[in-house]
Structures are given as structure tokens and as C-alpha cells.
Image (cartoon, rainbow, N blue to C red; front, side):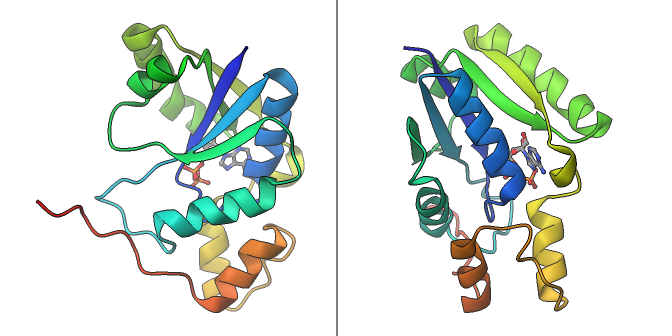
Length: 166
Ligand code: ADP
């Protein structure tokens, strides 16, 4: 069983993410869409809602599991789950500059490889941040996100994450 992980915050999931996840599903037996939370970041959608949107959108694709990635190291998560590759979409050379040291570190920490897929030309300009900005300023984002995400954007999104107590 060749298992890969597509990690990200997916706040919200958009068509560029979906395209890369679908391509990963064609290369591996199982793809885990691992939804992360960084407590230093403000999210538009709470973790549960980001997971729900990914599940709703990916329901028709086989071999895809959506789950929270948790707080620890991605390398450790991969080791525990028997993941052989982290799949990342690359939009630009700045994505590559950002990703390369992480890929090398992850391989040194747990032996997991990182596979880079060049982003589809139509989606090179897409990021969750830009989509939220366009939407907030009244622009149409219906070409960039799946229907269930569009609905939730119109509904306003849930509260941002709050750090765990304790
Ligand atoms: P962001 O969209 O802000 O980068 P994420 O952390 O949710 O947010 O992205 C998760 C991963 O999805 C990224 O590391 C990248 O590999 C991939 N990705 C993001 N946007 C695109 C895109 N437009 N095309 C292809 N892959 C993308």
C-alpha cells in the first residue's frame, strides 16, 4: 500500500488544492488530506469546518481520507501512519524555495520523501489567502472554489481557532 499525505491548512480548500490531490490519488493507493492548525495563525474557518469542506468536496474521489494532522511534527505523523510521500503543489519558485528545506528536513527526520507536482496553469495564481481577500472585497470567486466552499463563504465562516486550554 503506497500512502501519501497532502498537508495544508485548507482555509478554505480551493480548486488548485483539489487538482493536486486528485493527481496524487492517481499516483498512490491512498492519499491522506491532513488538515493542519497553527495556533499562531488566524483562520476564517474552524478546523472542523475546514475538514468538512474538504470531505464534502472530495467525497466522490476514491482512496482519499481527510483528517486533522494534530500538533506534532509532520515527519512523525508520516512515520506513524506509514506514509511514504508528502505531495506538494508548486506554484512558483518562491514555493520551491520555501518547500525545499522542509522536504530535506522531513526526509532526514523520518525518511519520508516529498513529491512536487507543478500546479496546473489555470490555478497558478490561486491561494486561500487571495481567494478570501477577493471574496471579502466583493469579487466573484465561484471559478476558484467548489460549491460547498462558496456556500460557507457566504455564510460567513465559523470562528477562528483558539489555542488549547491548559
Ligand atoms: P495556501 O493555499 O495558502 O498555500 P495551504 O497551506 O492550505 O494554503 O496549501 C497547502 C498546499 O497546497 C501547499 O503547500 C501547496 O502544496 C498546495 N497548493 C496551494 N495552492 C495551490 C495551487 N494553486 N495549485 C497547486 N497546489 C497548491
